[in-house]
Length: 232
Image: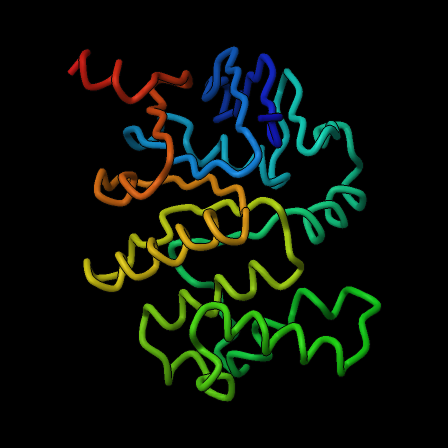
């Protein structure tokens, strides 16, 4: 299967005071279309940095980031913003919902940057909320929803532009075990039935078990899950 995401010879350095810190070191990775990939590893290993590069939030110091055949690391800031809006859905540990807006208005926000009519936006929002099982909570504000329901709203918002790729940074880290499993099952459905390619950062082996492949990140490089267990 063709790679939807390719990272080629990725190096990422940050400057902290007078010191340069190398977070990713010569990293290479192909992620096939339709995969559900879990990234694990200790804090500071480079997991979230990888996620940010794939999602076009950050740029590599060296190397190439290719998504759907396009090098996104060479795009200008405005080009990258437009690319993100159409190609990637973001799901975070903390739901980043606007507290004064209803669920449907939170989900609609990304569509305000498009040329869709108000009627079409409303139809798309209703479909996205139905997909995550929240059609009846459309008029509720975040404070009137449980943590799991708020994360479902965030997932609906990530899906609203119908992106091929979902990037998830600890999407269940703020949820209890049962609610976390419901969210992970929803992600599995989006992967298996909707064909979404999902990259998920997690510290939780039980969450990683929902993915089709797990990679461990250690000191800025990738290790297959089996090899990591053997090393342990």
